Length: 587
Image 1 (cartoon, rainbow, N blue to C red):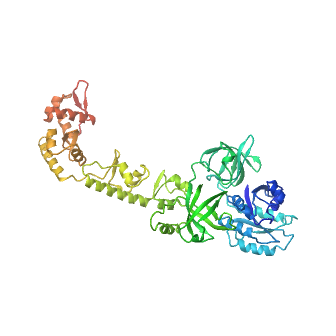
Image 2: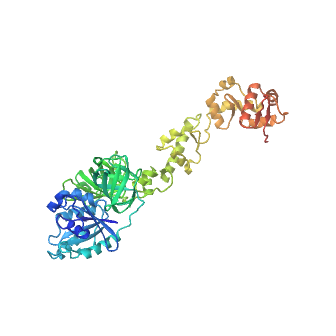
């Protein structure tokens, strides 16, 4: 299926052409048929000669119903632009073209109607001149009369060519279904209609309702009046929803693939068709079928920040229309550049932001977004419309990662110099200092070359052993001299206290490789455990604590804890009768 919207001035024959092409009445209201004036959106469809189905969204042409018109053309990829030969180009022709141009509609067909009433060539010349200055440049022209039927075969052939030129939609894309009608059917419940521009809908699928944020389920679907279990883009669909009342949703609401879209009330945009500073500060933003009041903050000649009164699911590259409520013409087109812009809370921030926006083209680029944001979730990049440039839940720009690694090394070095007796820095403290939003990012920073000397163990970060303070070095020299002469005569608690060696100092000495702590308050020289095994291996197995004490030339106080220390490391084993034996002996 292909979906085409009509456009053009009031009473130029849009609905007449749709009736002639489809044999269906697009005007749904009796008031529309009585007055011969399209007020709201109409829908009809036909099958072309080659079997392609074209569904029409017939829009009103009167100036009073422009919001209805915008709701119809917003999600549609192609347009049948209608101009009457006997009246030519008219004010609403301009407004409709400005809207289509702002929304970036590039595929169209110009139908000059009422050719039975006037020479169509003057109208064609002016219409071509107008269209060629817009996104619909070089649209093919068809001369036709809805009253006599002349030219209808040519119009059908031109429509066939138009729909075959349309880019293929992505059936796997995330669904963003802009609702253009909502009503209730007895026994079925709430039904919404919309143009499915991308993605696929299936019965039973769950979607997020934009207005409330809650999930709803698809109870059933119709397309072109027939039930379908699945609908693929592009198509017109009527979706029966479970779990929502008709009054809870309506035109401008949206159904979304859950977890795949960002709701935003602040966007930076590039403007077309107007200078930013000349725009009113209060406008309405039209996208899809939605219309939301916005406040405009100019940043440069063609860029601005829009503050939306209600959040919308927007992505980089979206095109929207800015218009005054009740105004006759579109004020500007808006190309979305950023859906998560930074705050402008410092002097000169707006000017710097304008310079940055000048480098952005509205095409989602995951690598560029990561460079700008430095740290971002992969899912957030996807929701912006960009492909993440790497694997993982959290991503860090490589250049920023290297800066953070250097910053972390400096932080640890300062801490080591200022607090030489402390065992590194808690990982959580370092994470906060680096302003990392998630602990899982810390190992990523540690993988940078600048962090090669940093270790993470037991929830603490360390940058090698710290140089010991001079008083501590002198005290350790005294201990070392004593233990060198008598390797297993560990200093007593009183002796250590006299030297100013508490648990904090002893722990720092052990980290520096100066001592071996076999128990709280009992220290030997590094390598004393290996030396003890050498001595104990010469004893008959098994041996007692007393035999070990004599072999090592130490006290029972030291011998007991040394044997426990060696047993914890699997070097000795305590037997059920309280004796010990060496498990292995490596010289």
